[in-house]
Length: 396
Image (cartoon, rainbow, N blue to C red; front, top):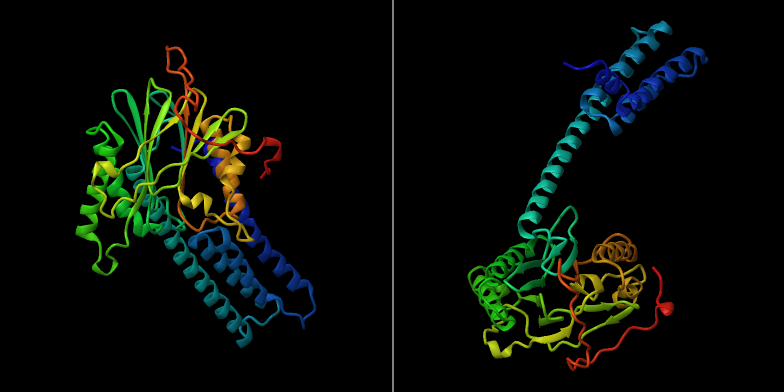
């Protein structure tokens, strides 16, 4: 049973108040026609009422407004003493037909809106199945991520990322299937499934890369169209981050290098020796290069796909990720991703030309354990350069 409070809330619902606009318009037109001179005919303006109602109401309410407009047209004819005239009858019939067309438009619009909502729900379900949300904390790492699909109304495309835990390490992958949008989902799903399984059966990045290569190659051999042979591949960045060692082991299979952020607005772009992308025939372990980077407490690794750095503004300039991210180098992963997400969309005027994905990974002290020791870049024989001073960085 509906309570009086619920009935009152329904009666004052904003949509019911807005419905007074077309009804008030009908009243104004009727009064104006009544007080105006006989040579001024305002009745045809009543068609505005159902047209206005169609903007914010469904077909039933719009039909009610249209019917009210037809009745008002008849009232105007009666007041003028011309209700039975051909002119007034034609006006009433024309108003009824136009109102009916507007109602049909509302039906079609609502049907398409329901179809769009269903498509969005399917896309969201596909994203949840394929791109499992990364937890805020995994092992000794704090994580944050964002995915931006280039296809309108899509939630997922050709970019991918995933994380998995072994006994003493966290494994991550971020990748980019050749192409964008919906056609690339199949290969993205294949690589994600292969990674989640292989990460639990291999103890080194070369073995993991070789396993993923074999999975992608088999998939392309079975499902790749003959006329597109050798045109499909996947770039990927594979990471192993031990819980106890302050390092990150990285293998780049043709993928852009991550950014290493440190307190003090220091941004490092590691020089990675690239391995060929997955899907072009790489199966030997000795072809895979593993780079070791220092990754101590409060350091942050920012992984990204090329859709981020290739986003263009109105002048055609690419998004300067390395320059922009320096000002947020000391922020937690979630805050860092939020700033980049907003700044990237502002740079590209809200529309990206390619799928884009970002993952921020921060080394945090383990729970109930002392902080991890810091190991310098010199100890690891890593050569890198910091970005320019924060005062010179261009603000978004």
